[in-house]
Every structure is written in C-alpha cells, then in structure tokens.
Length: 227
Length: 158
Image 1: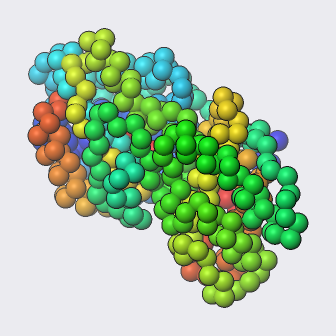
Image 2: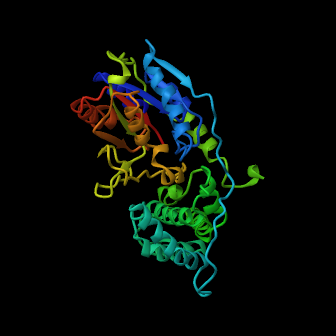
Image 3: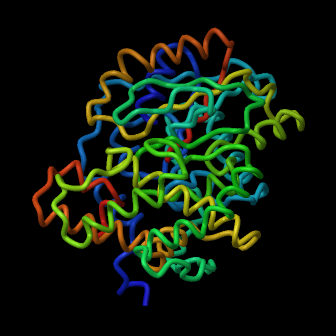
C-alpha cells in the first residue's frame, strides 16, 4: 500500500495511507499516513459502525491540509476479540463418516442460504461447495497418518482448498449467528478450536510437516502462528 | 485464559513478523499538495485486499496485477490468499475494508467533491521487492486513475 502511494504521488495524485502496520509504513515512508491499531483485516476498525468509520476518514482526509509529509496515529485502539464465536454446529448424522465430513455436510443448508442472501461467495478458489466434505475426508486421512502422496486432495492446492473450507464455514456461521457479529478473531478461534473441520486441518498440517512434505504445501494452510 | 490458547495473538504475531521483514526503500518522497479544496476533489479508493467481482479473474498466488471495479459494485469477493488476518469483518460490512458507502455519504454532504467512477484492488501479499508494482502494474493503475481525473487516493490495506 505504501509503495503504491509513492507510485501515485509520482504522477501527481495526492495519497493517504491507512496503515495497519505502523512499523512497515514508517520504513516505506509514503507522504501521508494515518496509522490505525485495529484488527488486521479491518482497516476502518469496526464493521457496521458508520460513525466510527467516518471518524477514521475525517482524520485521514485532514492530513491533506499538511504542507509536508505527515504521519499520525488514530487515537483509539480497537483490540482483537479472541474468544470463539458462539455458533451452533449440526449434530452427528452419519456415525460412519469422519466427524469433519459429517459436520460439513450438515452446514450446507446454512451455507446456501448465505449465498442466496449475499449473492456472492468466496468459496471456489480450488473446489466447489459440494466438494468440501470430500476435501475434508482427504485431510482426515492425512491427519490419521496417511502418506501425503497416497491421498489425492480434491482441488490439489492445499492452501486454496483450506481457504475454501474456511470460507464455507465462515459464510455458513455468519448465517447461523444472525446479528451476533463476531469480533475480529472470533471466527478463527471458533474454527480452529471448536469445529471438527478446523481441528482436522491443523492435524493434517502437523502430519504433513512430520512427513516432511514440501514447506509451501503445508505451511500456508493456516495462519503462520498456529501450530 | 486467552494467553493459554494456541489460536490467539495472531495480529501480534503478524505485526512482529512484518516489522522484521525487508521493506522497499525510496530515496525521495513525492508529495502533492492539493491545488483546490477537498470539496472539489474526486476521490478513489485503492485497496490491497484483492477485491474482485465474481465475473473477474480471481487473484492468483503471487498475483502482481490489479482489478478495477465500478463505484456501484457491491458484490465483491475478497480474494486475498493470506490466512493471517480476519476475513469476517469484510463479510459483515465491506466498508470496513473498502469504505465506498462512506465516500458516497461524504460526497452527498459536500465534504469531498465527487466519488471516482472506478476503484482498484491489488493483492497485499507481494514479494519483498514489490518491483512489479513499482515499475509495471502500479504505474498502469496510476495512469487509469489519471484518466479518471482522480485528485486523491485513499489506500486501505489488509
């Protein structure tokens, strides 16, 4: 972002960077920075809070009045919410299926309602929604210790498939909790700590690491700080 | 309890990691002072959230390009490849990443002159040198902003 500010200023356009990583913005040094200590992924701070977003924008646009490069901090910090969101999960339906597979099948109605309501979905980078259970089945086998070369993952690209599974759960979960909007890391906490899918992905990743599968094949399946 | 759970402190970990990474260096800083009041300026948003419409090409891993969309588009997908930040906020309210409705309100109130006809998205996860963006796709996007007579760009990261 800060790099683009330099590029745009070079052709005569005035720029303002909302920076979520103040240290990086300081190094790159674009001419106008409003550093905001908000949850990563939420550069305007608070979803659904137009008044707060306007506060951020007002301070950002005020930087245009400065006669020289300027770096300011937005005074209010928005903390991450790390507690798992409260979202119901479907009961076991098929005791013979791996728990994550059964769980994902049970969420399909909520997922479809979400897509119907929003008109768009982030699922589809590597697999279609109907392939989510099959992908979780392959991940389950890896998690159980199957050799990574012996099990074919639908969609093949582990990073993209895990993105699709996470997006499927996110869209279904937001549909199920309605107006109880989760905090910034509440979905992640719920997904990795509570859902069978999240636990299966983490276990599969540990197994791939132990098997010494190529680093890019497993590392980026989940956030880098997760073990 | 929070400190004991494995899935916590993701933002802290990412900020600590980013602070240790190489960043592109610029020997000079271009700085354009506005030649007219903000209330007469045309404003565009450029985000690094890899936003795209469903009918546009998805962002690939390591995509150095950008996508343009219309000021009226709201059916946008966040196509960012990083699993290291929250995606739920965008699903709840796209303005928390791409404050297009807020810009329209500021234009209606006369705070800014006009909302630009097009807005742009890049992918935030770039190689350390970001040389393609500096030398190729960034200048291409700048040319399109100039073609749209944009005075001010607000850059929003994820």
